[in-house]
Image (tube, rainbow, N blue to C red):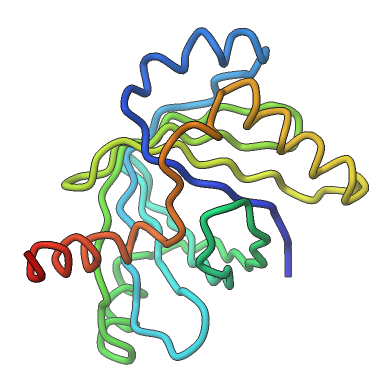
Length: 177
């Protein structure tokens, strides 16, 4: 399975990060609308990602601890030609946990994917994924921390969980007050 180093924070303003991305010399790759259907799964997280304007999707399985600081994630991807049919099959077999809709602005700095996400009903987030692609672990960690520092993400509110788990947390907060 592939491996990356991830970090996620809540953002007050994604727009305010644009000058910092320019300072970093990050490259804007695309702005896309994604729908992630998370399925009930006894181990790790399993989601089907569909993108507006595409007949293809991605089945993504990943394991990642829920921690506020940067954490390792191992994952496996499979390109899907008929995501609607697979979604129906997985829904019947496993059941849907939740559906997350978002607009993602994808930026790249070397081996780090920088996601500026606007997630329906949840808000704005920044997610870093430094992918291990032949560089040493030390180099990957240094790159990851450089991006965090230049984007000043250490001062933002860190998020320990998947987007799929945030609605549940917010409901629980409302229920206890």
